[in-house]
Length: 199
Image (cartoon, rainbow, N blue to C red; front, side, top):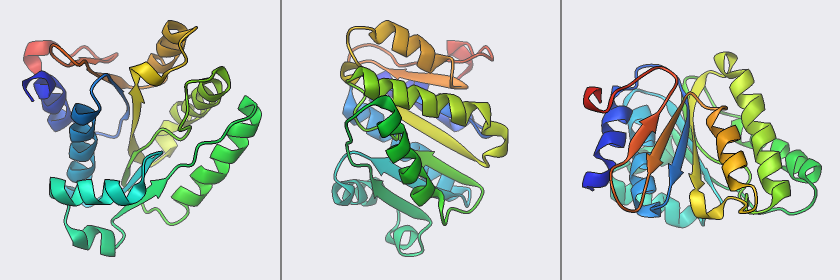
């Protein structure tokens, strides 16, 4: 828990809409940050979406255990979507993902928060290329988007051959990057300078 203190302080300091990247080695710590992001949104009256390649039922149970009220699910203040894995060319993956995004955003009211990485499998070159295309599109029109987004990436699941290149490209398409290592302190990288002691 101590290792994610910096990330949690940063989350508590957010006052405006941001496109965030959650870059992690420890899935349990990542879930705490994702759930905090959702809870802060609900506490502020925002609609929330949690989209994942994991089983949506287990995510709902985890959110309930975290303290998200059942009423939030019943009133659709939070919706959990399962993102199916798809293979093919990056263009085919991109087309499928655009359909998923349209479906997810169909009834979403502003302001909102989303936790999602829309391409569930980024271990292939085709998958990470499609994901990067979506990240560029979202970041490019973020001012008009109407909400905050957190994009989680397990470091070990990113395509290995050109991993550093993919990571650098992902960094450039987000306002801030929250890093959660397995060992050691978490950190935050963002264009506006935030010193470790300030957050």
